[in-house]
Structure formats: structure tokens, C-alpha cells
Length: 151
Image (cartoon, rainbow, N blue to C red):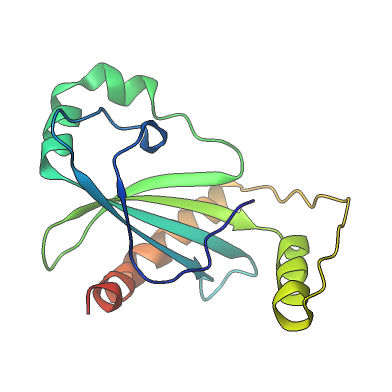
């Protein structure tokens, strides 16, 4: 897992890795990164929110084949869309489980400058129940996260 520890907004030019149709003009995508733990969940998640420009939303809505073929999710991530109630902007929200091995390695690196090379990879099953719970709580809290990034 390669997570960006920068909690401030990150602006990048549109790229193929975003999995949205490419606009003809250069559209700036705004991304927000943070870690999140729902109140009733033991797991920690890495969250990426990508603002979707209106031009792309319009293309997505007119291209149903694209939506059907590109909505496949891996077992360790969850994707959903969120509309901010204040400014009506739409965000693609990507959630990834953060393994405890990863957290231990980062804590050792940050606090002690000790990079442990652990060979074991902890696999956590991202069940539908965890995804539903995460989405429910995150949708409630996203208004606060996104508002704090825009201040």
C-alpha cells in the first residue's frame, strides 16, 4: 500500500488512473486524502476523495456502458460517490483497508526512523458488512472532512 500522508488538498491533472472518461480540455481534479475509523469498527481505512468536474459527470451519465463495465471493485477497496450537501460537488470516494502491519511499520518509521521489512502481509477481508458500515458513517462525516480541507 502506498498511502500519501499529506492531509492537505492535492491537485493533479486528470490521468487514466482515475478511471473516468478523459475530458477534451485539461480539467484539474482536486483530491483529498485522510485516514478514517468509523465509531463502531475496529478497522482503519485510507480514504481518497476525488472531486468530479461537472463535464465528467455529464459524460458519465450519457455513457451507461462505461458505468457498467468500469464499476468493478477489488476485495480490499470500496468505491462510492458522494454529493456534498453545501456546494453540491460530487466526489468519487475510494476506501482501502489499512493493515495493522502497515500501521506498525509506519509508526516505527515515523517515530524511530526504523524501517522494518516485515515479509508477512496481513490480509483483511473487506466484507460487504464492513463496506456498508463504513459508507454509512463516512457519508455522515464527509461534510466535516471536506469542509475542513476547503478552509
